[in-house]
Image (cartoon, rainbow, N blue to C red):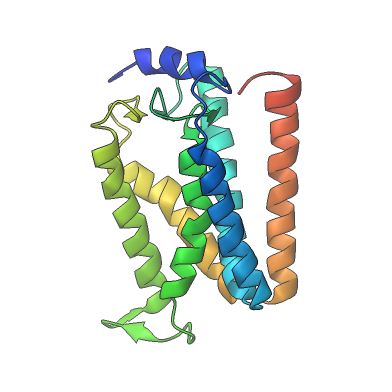
Length: 207
């Protein structure tokens, strides 16, 4: 392992109010404003892209928390720098960012899902490009005290394949899906996440 001590550091601040800062409220208000603006304008595809991305984000973070419980260490942790650590690998600030990341992706997508850019389907191109950008940016984050990859084999490429590709792929797919399918996908993911959090965080105290 690269930094096994970061697990203890993250667990020591997990859902603790000691480091709370008021700017989180401003961030939450900003996210609410963005979503309510899209809803008021009837941009339901944009909203679906945002919600579906966020639901996948929570599923992945729950899995990371379960990995920590069963193996002793998560794949990634947030040992410091957050005003409120929601799960071992995600602080409130990161979660707020992920709430709008799917919305941001939707703003890049052309109306025609079959349109090619540089000879590549635009959905594939933007999913891969955004996933690559986020993965590479994590290289910067792990060189700060605020974020850590715990295992030496876990890095930008595994993150790209198993985390950010699913995030952006589901978001783009849900953006283009029929409204009934959008609702079913988002509701199903929400109920799954809610059930997992209730059992693993609330009842069993595993994550």
